[in-house]
Every structure is written in C-alpha cells, then in structure tokens.
Amino acid sequence: MSTLVRGIQHLGIGVDDHAKSWAWYRKFFGFDVPFFNSEAPAPLMKIYTNGEVINKRAAMVLNLKGGCAMEIVQPISFTASHSSIEMQLGDLGIFIGTYKTPDIKAALDHFNLHNEKLINTGVKTPEGKETFYVMDPNGLLLQVIESDEWYTSSGHPMGGNLGCTIGCSNIEKSKELYADILGYDEVVYDESGVFADWKNLPGGEGRYRRVLLRRKNPSRGGFNQLAGKSQIELIQDLSDRKKNKIYEGRRWGDIGFVHLGFDVLNMAALGAKLDRAGFGFTCDSNEALTMGDSTKVHCTYCEDPDGTLIELIEVYKIPIVEKWGIYLNVAKRDPEKPLPNYMLKSLKFARVKD
Image 1: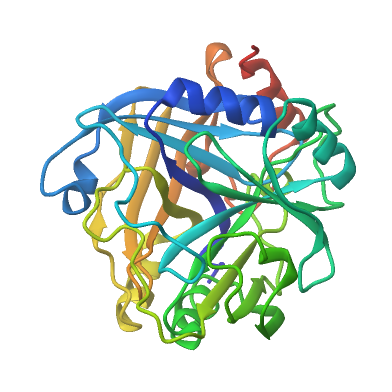
Image 2 (image 1 turned 180 degrees about the horizontal axis):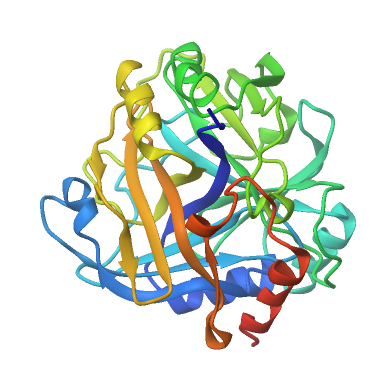
C-alpha cells in the first residue's frame, strides 16, 4: 500500500484580523499565493467551538520559493482572543512555528529594515543551524532557520513553513503518533538541558528535553517538490510545574496555532490505523467537502496525547490557476507523481501583490 501520510501540508493559525495578518505574512514571509480565501461555515469544527457552527474566513497560502503552506483563520461569529494564561515553552500544544530562509543574514536584514523585533539573533539550534525568532502581529512565536532546499529562486529573503515545535507531557507517548503513524521517524537530535537559542523566550531559562523529527523516507505527491522536507520538534518541560494546555477552555480559531495539517492518501486506511493506536478521528467530514466548483477534499481531525489538534486532508480536486480553469484532479492521475513544473510555476499568476 502507498504511504498513507505524505508529510506536513500546512500550519494553521487563528487570528483576530485576517487582512492585517495575511498582509504581514506576505510582506515578511512571502506567502502571497492563495489556494483559497473565502468565508464559510465550519460545521466540522463544532466539537471545538462549543457545539456551535461558526463562520470563519480562511485562506490557504503559499510561498513559491518553497516550503509548506499556512492556513490563516479568522472566526467571524466571535472575536478571536488570546489565552488568559501567559503560555511558555513546554506548555501543551503548538508553541512555535518554524520557517526557512536561504540566507539567515539576508533574513535578519529584511526584518531589521522594517524594525521588527527579533529575539535571540546569533544563536544556533542543537543541530548546529543558525536561527533567530520573531513575533507576528498577534504575538505568535516564529523561528527562522537557514535551509538549502528550494523550488524557485524568487527575490524574497524568506521561504515557507518548515514545521513547528510542540509541547508534550511525555515525548515517548507523542512519538507513537508523530513518528510511528505520521511518519516523522528520523530522530535528528534528542537532547536535554538548558538551551542558548531559547534564552529569551518565555520559560527559556528552564530545563527541557528536545527531540527533532524528520522523515527517513522522502515524502511523495503532487506538491512535494514545492513543500520539500519538513520537521516536527517535540519538547518536554523537565520541571515539576503544572503544564498548561494552550487551547484548554478556548475555541478553534482563537489566537494561536490552531492545528498542524497533513497531506494524506487513503483516508479510510489511515483512520483504521489511527483508531487501533488510540488516536481515532474526533471529527470527520465522512465524504468530500466541496468549496465552490474548484476544491474537493476529505478532512478529518485527530488529537495527539495532549490534545494538540491534527488535521488530515485527502485532496481530490484543487485549483492551480482557477481563473484559467486549471485544476489538480487527483482522481485522474497518479497521486504520488509530482506535478509538472509548468503547473506548479503557473501558481505565480495567482499572486496577491501589495
């Protein structure tokens, strides 16, 4: 059977001002190509929105330089808000979004030119890669790491999403999902201690275990050339303090990293595998969701051992350049075969320019 999980598709963020947030991510991270950008009800998320069907505006956006996508979500039915508790490293859920750049110095200059506040410049990750951190307009923490894997050579100094950092209560238990089922089975490092690259982050003076996971076998699929390699860092606070759940008592769409999305194949088989391992679907569209005439997908959700929300997406049909009637129809092609370059590069005609 083909690989059921092909890798990270996108990182979802909840915001309180969609236009402002997307403009910031276009300017600083080059996310200027939308797959979709629309307002619609979210009936699938009822169990995460207090049993109510909310309306939301969501945009799935790409940086054609390379990297995974982002989904920017603003609830319309309520005003997205921050947690009443100040969260820190080791709290349970997605705490840091990770993004890549071909040139760390050029990226630093890009942020400095616009007087964006940078955190921990001139430091290295446990893997030995130079890194720095910045906060988005809602105070979400973003990490920038240098990479040499790119699809195009656009002039923007930043690339797309690389993955995220997730707080866990028990890393070994979390690996049963992220490594054994979702396929992030290569341990790049597994270190415990106090880390220099976290020194000025919330809770960064504490002792943590950090495990960086990647895939031993390269992902396959239509967009793999564009998405490239991705990673998940699991962290565990080694102190005896009470760890807070980042979304406890809150709704999907509230400000923060709302979910991590994966591109999958054969949802039924994956669902059976997740169920046997104790990570069964918490909600399931049961059949393909259609968004207008251009998009058709099957969406499900599950949770990691600490309740972090995982979105699973099997794509049937999505627009490449909708105004030209160019679509990706997976049912009519080998779903693991890369899309032709002309089709991927034609996405540039959908760019939003400021």
